[in-house]
Image (cartoon, rainbow, N blue to C red; front, top):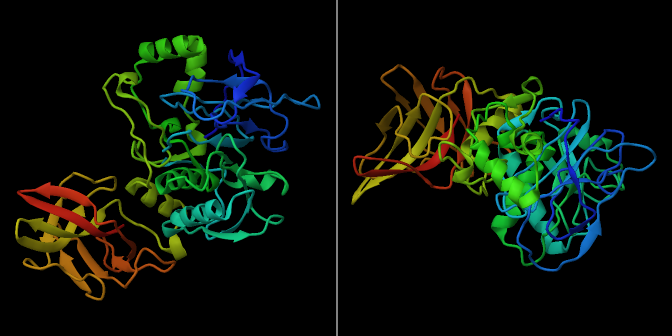
Length: 424
């Protein structure tokens, strides 16, 4: 995630609508969190006014120290800025209306198998329950557990101060004093919808275990339509090209990041419109972990010592074609977000009915010689202990199996196939 951008032009904003901003502040590891030693340099995009117009002054550096940049984002396109120098503690934030990485700062990973103590201060009982509910979604795939404790002795300290939502990256949270937040949720209330809780909580806890923003990945290679982007920010913010280069187009140092192929569906990705790119590509608002998010974090925090030894993907699917029914194994010779893509091979397990995969172990061998074994237990993928299948490369090695949302995986020859479990 670190980006060395120490010199750039900025505009200084002293009074900002508190309810609109989100924080992308970056501090030296020795400095206090957002409530202190923040300079007055602010990156700002215009955002349509919502709610109250309470304003607050952005703090200034104190005690002769120079703090890094506090980035305040009001943008309709919601560009997320990330500026940090190697060796510094980093804080990043979510957008007011939607985030979305399978990119990770390899210097800030927690030891695999860590149980992180999390405290929450200042949230209503309902909001606190929702934070707890959605934070643990990462634990379904990463060998990281979260235990919620009273404030005073925790690894992650959460507040719900109105304004921005943000989080320190990974182990940087260890440098934050117990009486200061390492994460904040700035707009939750008892009327917040579950999709919004999930989107923001999962995103921020992704930062807390080391993930950075997807578009900052060195492999993102977004074909920006720079004249359009320059024109937008010149009109909306008065930014010159150097400012846009540093705030929009900069990417992380590849020497300190771990990346998968660029994933626009990642929970860590931010939305941007098609007009901002040369190929018309865009990024949607993402509210769930993508397939790549899940498999990527499983590689970085492997569960119970299991290793994924192949880039293949296997899905246990139920298929329908009019009144015809089939269950089978869809095999992909590559790892990734396979939605909409036909599998490399499919083997029917029982045409004419659907398999009760739980408690029905079986095995199939594909024409290329790969064998997949399965033995699903009830609630696979929803508990700390997962079922295993034999690897498609080597049936004597294990894969994790996760229960899917019964989503449409692919369609072919009139058949619509829905995932029941997926395995890696």
